[in-house]
Image (tube, rainbow, N blue to C red):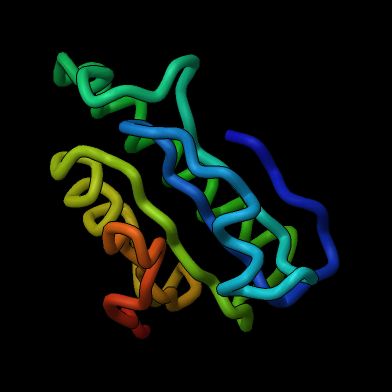
Length: 124
């Protein structure tokens, strides 16, 4: 986990497991004053999730990251999630997120040459 700077009420969470996500792809969507956080691995690639233990580690990191974001920025934030993850990680992220404990968030998905586009809002 890489923490973004404190102070902003706009937070982006990059989930870079299958591929790297450059901050320059996020700033045009969320604004320059966004605190960018990241969950990643040493070398993001499609084959990084191979064992159930890998997913368990991801689950612990997601839980810790969501708690840290809330601790650093508060509950009333504009949280945007940018996933580049296998389906198993996307499902696990949804299982970890708790509506009464974590901020609501918007999900942005890669849309070919368009880059990231808004897909869905997950509200408390």
